[in-house]
Image 1 (cartoon, rainbow, N blue to C red):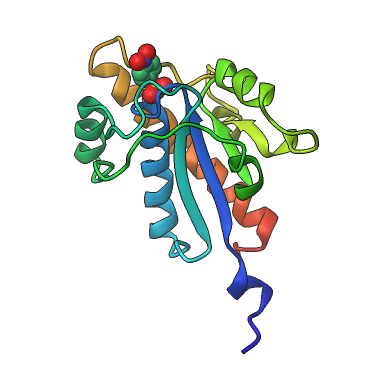
Image 2 (image 1 turned 90 degrees about the vertical axis):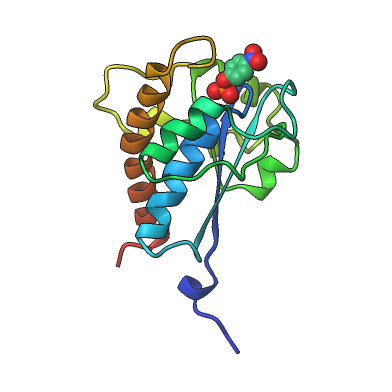
Amino acid sequence: MILSYREALLVKVLFICLGNICRSPTAEGVFAHKVARADLSGHISTDSCGTARYHIGKPPDTRACQAAARRGIDITGLRARQLCQDDFTRFDYLIAMDGDNVMDIKAVCPPGLHDRVSRFLDFAPKLATDDVPDPYYGGPHGFETVLDLSEKAAAGLLARICQEHGLDD
Ligand code: 4NP
């Protein structure tokens, strides 16, 4: 059986922060939720990781899980891992949460693949900030901010991917 371009299409998206227990799993959960609601889970896959190795194997921070659950999004099954070289060829979009993440990712990015790396909030250009603030050392409000920013940027990212890959018709 010969599959059409659209039937065979699988776009791979990787969300990246420092520890992979607060922002990037939240962003992944929010984005995957939107992908599922658009009935595109067969065409867009998601993952997340951290530039650091502090929390490898751990589930997302309890505060991130609770905040996401209040919006109907379950991220408890995710497990932290560190960014690796294969990620640059396996993923079409590498989405960093802040400018430090972009620098750390580009420092280990193979030549010719830098255009796969972007900042999450570039997909929500009307916001007052470029970075998703790290909520790890703060209170619960920070996790709500991560979710609010993720909702906006995830919508923009999904629209961009659909447009670039002909998934919007
Ligand atoms: P994340 O937050 O990068 O959004 O997962 C952090 C989690 C842990 C640490 C720093 C940031 N830490 O230093 O352990």
